[in-house]
Image (cartoon, rainbow, N blue to C red):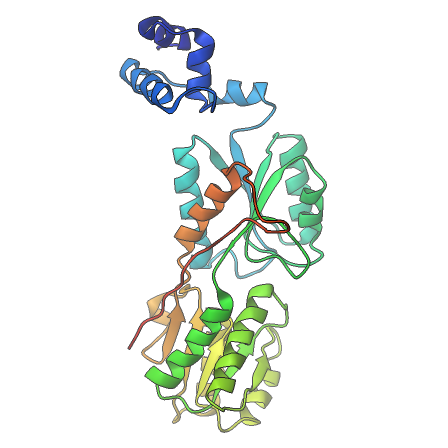
Length: 324
């Protein structure tokens, strides 16, 4: 197996210059770095990332932290995020390490172990929530992290997100313009996630623009009777903008149970349900999770750059929705 010395000897360069070139040191010209990597490939050089990162006291791994949520395991949206993260990490010779648990305490202990035991210095959180213990831990450790999801008001760190205000407005407009819904309601969870608040704002803007009266449901995971009461109290509703696909599907099924002979048009978000669970009256906004995962890794490894004061590094990934 070829070594750095073999590359240096073939090119007439010093070992230190070759080493810096292979590690993308900015002191080495772009032309030299490119040529060194070409020769390394020709000779079949395989870098020892474990040894390199051991020297730097950093594992060649990125910790990916899941929210504590019983919907996570079977949610296609998270599969898309992981696919994008893994694709981008592989190109950088990194691997992903997952932190997941049934409680915040379990996830917190997992992350502590990643930092102190596994020497992981970079993390991607698949959520952002105010006063989260895991985020508070990362903020006080010598690590870098990015969240998928906009930080709550007053919090500042790099993030990847969609324009959820626009997505909320687009989903509402789709029901009104394309599906001819007269009185769409907005269905959200009781968690108060930042993306829910933004989608609700988009819904409210569109309802105001079209001179419609907004109605907001808080859908509980446990209390089906509450949802039935809300539906019965709003007989005018003929459509719903749901903050995610699962909330939308739950509302749709409850509505059809109460009114089997009536139809309702529903828009959810994440494009996370199998086709077998939906029909022509259930629509979903695609948030392109694979692209979000890729963008999160790119942002995590991005070198600090001069920015406007108080600006936060972030990437906004476009969403899309069917037109008919």
